[in-house]
Length: 179
Image (cartoon, rainbow, N blue to C red; front, side):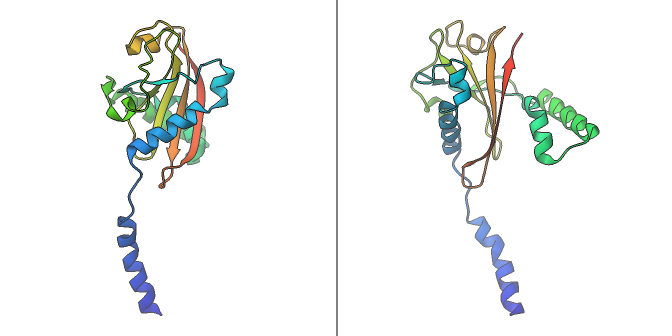
């Protein structure tokens, strides 16, 4: 019996190695569909029928979700939360911020989102099981990021945490005001 247990224990890493994580395009599509059906956006008056996905990966600030991540990881003391926020700020400072074209996000919708008033979803780079997204309206019209995210605008930001099978395990969202 003991030999059988040792044999099974030795085979577990081999069985786990055969499992693959979901394809990135599946995770982007899952997040896209979640956002399209989010009632919070409908209450804000955003038009989700003609929603567009920005064709570039855009840096998103994880610091917005500091409180959520603190609770998720069990950081309950003020000191722990402060250290986490400090780490997120340093990570943000060290991160590449220029948008870059992504075929994964460009293929989600044919609508470029450049018309005035269009609802646009901007995705971050996928980081293992974490994906950030921002939903805003193109107030000014035009194809650039500065037209979608403008001064005195508001957006809804999302943090998606995916499980190994590609399903959303947790989703956090916040309304962000830009001044």
